[in-house]
Image (cartoon, rainbow, N blue to C red; front, side, top):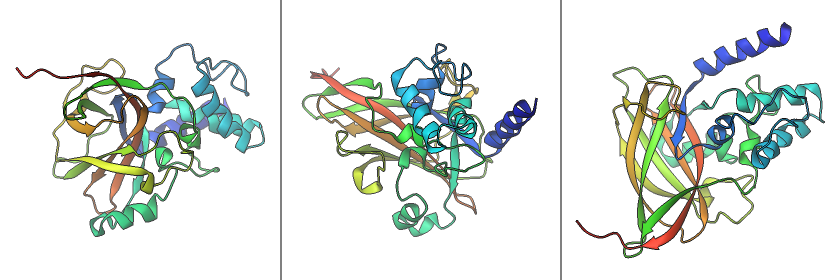
Length: 257
């Protein structure tokens, strides 16, 4: 009963401290959470998690607590909700250096990398692994592709709050990226004040979604990390950072219509 109460309180904390997650291409959290065969409750060591990348993410956090019961609880919290936690950047208007101060590394768990955080530890989603990647074709002539990006908004900001979106691609997916830093990323697109749309993605738990077609340079025939930063222009600088894995394949020339 005590455990149920704890997880209820943590679920409430997630709701207060999160705004949503990338639903397409699916974030690493969603990749694990949407597969019903992954069961985090079988035992403490995570033997009920079938997908190897998700099992590795669980084990990474579990081991940080010396394979203890506390470690199991912390590792499970990665999978309780797909929502990414907020990080607060009150001086975001000063520019990129303020972002780097608040989030220097471990970008794929930017707001939740404290080993003893009451909201769990999401470092499992930063590990170097062969994460399943959503595939996109690219235009051989322009060496670019259009990604129909979707962000599932489980909580909408106030109507008078402006915001902007930044999209980054990792420069070298094959390097050790467990502690991925901003120097490892390339800014490829930016959008301002996008309005929410009606959701049609079954893996989004909300009726609202932010949709953007983002044009990005391809990383020929290999995987890369797509990172989105959603910066709300609020006094405390609410910010969401989320990671997805994508792969550029099948060189084709898109015919003009």
